[in-house]
Length: 71
Image 1 (cartoon, one colour):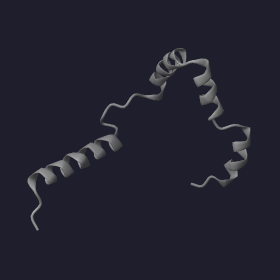
Image 2 (cartoon, helix red, strand yellow; image 1 turned 90 degrees about the horizontal axis):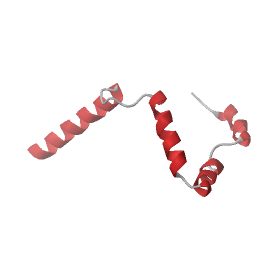
Image 3 (cartoon, one colour; image 1 turned 60 degrees about the horizontal axis):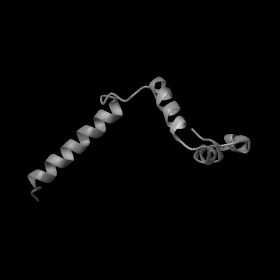
Image 4 (cartoon, helix red, strand yellow; image 1 turned 135 degrees about the horizontal axis):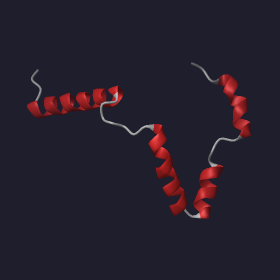
């Protein structure tokens, strides 16, 4: 069964991009540089939106689930 060249090229590029992303070759930003961006976003968001984001964050009751975390 012959595979179309376009499909084969697309699959090869997809595999290469996946491997590059997993290996960290794409130059992803380190965690430290994300802090200024988060501060800028918080300045742009309305107080209602910030309250909604805060309400969606895990709270103290989620710590009871820590014993169920696997490896």
